[in-house]
Image 1 (cartoon, one colour):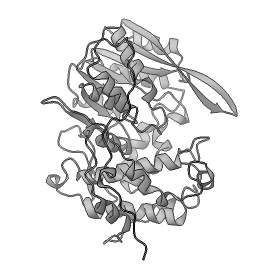
Image 2 (cartoon, helix red, strand yellow; image 1 turned 90 degrees about the vertical axis):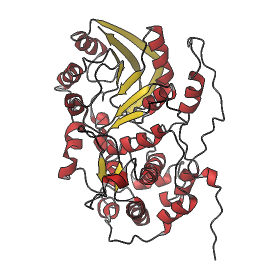
Image 3 (spheres, helix red, strand yellow; image 1 turned 135 degrees about the horizontal axis):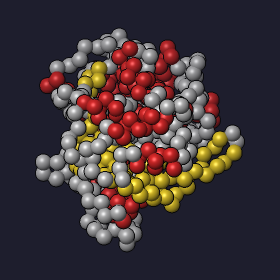
Image 4 (cartoon, one colour; image 1 turned 120 degrees about the vertical axis):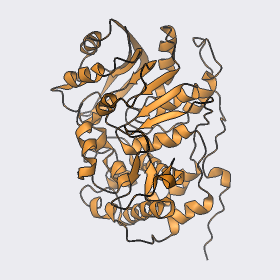
Length: 419
């Protein structure tokens, strides 16, 4: 009889120790939290389109250079969560938002600042048990042929995993706050939601179990190159042949991801913590749910084009979490809002409408890339309709993008706007 190798409990749920150090440049005048924040942020997941891991230190350089003082920050397009987590590590009060539930779920785990609560036996239960109830064969029915993302065994593994998470930890998990207060409860497929009292802050184990799979899918299936069928997840044969995977199916390497899970260690000040929304940014800003008089607004809006349609880029991850296609009426807001910055025609109008809703924030910090549908001059002109002072900072980092077999270099900017 084959026996599983014993895995140390400390490996499950991640080791929160900071086992490396990075020197902080002398431009930071107050280094109480910066060194630790930089050290920890270097370990955050990065396999996410447009993540800002490489420039968080430049964000702080720029803010200090401009003598911007702030105690709270609203990260409106959080994506990978890198900026939100970095700010939380600096003891700032963070409000984070992302349209995609898959992103908001990951951010919820990272901002908790704690190790995973799942035990070794619970991980094995998720992997080994046969779901008690009939469960959706979503991956098998939708992703074996067109688009061809998984082998039959992989698809069965993913469907069983999702069903087991629901069976063991509840059909419903916490994913931020709705506009009317309370809890934003995401229910798997069409199952009946649990009572709110059972779901507060999760069932937290459901969040962490789903986070682990989302991270694994990003790590093994997003291997670079052209997007396949509009998604970041690679076509099956290409992914298996890639040097990252060496022919291994994703269910055979999942435990390696679990053993390497790591979460930042965040110590929130008394009465502090974080707020999280999983919302269309326009509707959220109109709702009145955000605190009035915020210090710093950080905007990293989509730059335009297909690579800015994050709902499509991360379609499978979003569908895996919800257990239904993006075309389902209950997910219509994701499709509609996800298309908002996709087309060049009307991009400036959408950006202008966004800024018009942000007047109650003292400082605006906006990330901008030269590949945007609007040039730097055009974006600056739009901002100046609302704020008299705009400072442009060119980030000394260059990105290379593959387009039509040619390599081109784009520039990244930070724009600070204030009255």
